[in-house]
Picture 1: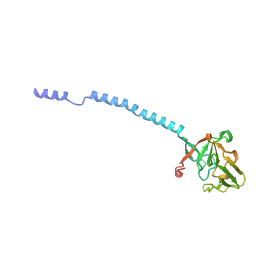
Picture 2: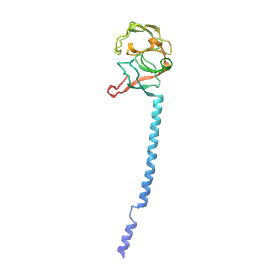
Picture 3: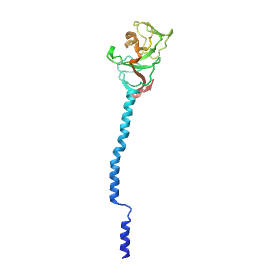
Picture 4: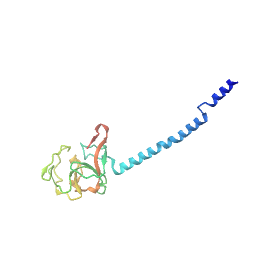
Length: 193
């Protein structure tokens, strides 16, 4: 008799309760979707904020910046607190004149005196050394000006195939979308600027 009591007590003392285990599995299944939804929503929100206010991707259209950037390259633009500097590559919203955004190099900023004559560029009395240009510019499109406040003088690196400040004048800094910070595609030519 004692043996049957002992074996009965052993069954009652079993630490595993199948009902409790099933409840735990159900509660874990219910918590899992909630545990990953919030991080996904936060990641999407952070990405949207970053791409709308800090940096954004842009595609290079045209050959005006060859050999620095090629038609179809993908670049990341830095927008936050950007102030144009000599030599920066920028994307400018110029759709009111040319119906497309421009990607060009900042040659002169407000207050600079720029002269473009016979393909040679002089900035504040000193001839620029421009190892980034594709080929020497053809004659024509001569310029002699001081860049007004709030404007920049932009030129493409492929001078013979670029519509830029030589034709359209100095561009308002308020039209600058951002500075090209990184070329990220194609991956084989990835680089920072």
